[in-house]
Length: 174
Image 1: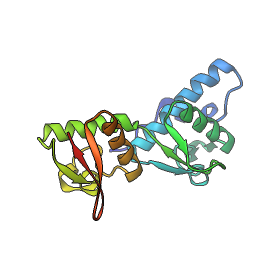
Image 2: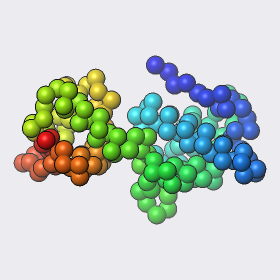
Image 3: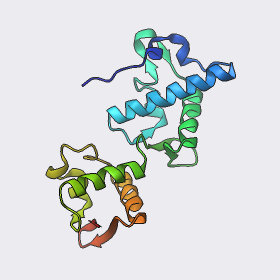
Image 4: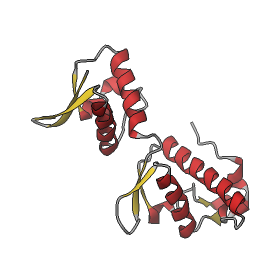
């Protein structure tokens, strides 16, 4: 399934931050939505600022337009304020993108566990994120940092407990 670009993506001024405050807010909201949708579609969780500048989402070669690094950082700051992005370093060269928050992933995982009658079952983190049983689930392939945060959210709600096993970490659902 191919990614659906919003109409603004083909509009050259979209790639230049607008000076009018109201217009800029709408533009930033559209950029945030586009960035999250793109990451979700391609299951991207970690981004590098240098690499993302050449990524199709910020570099539209067909109309010869590219969002500046400064503008990308402004978009990413908006995402950070909304809780969808976290910087990995002080220089802001790499970040974690959360197109779905840990609590939302936890809810999806718990729904799958409940639906399949696996409450009171222990899973390794690998089985949960990469096992054959979860292949058709949206959380299949979830990066370990996000999986752990999702399970921590469930643990806070009393629905799971993260446990240490001989070969790594696991989780038991309640």
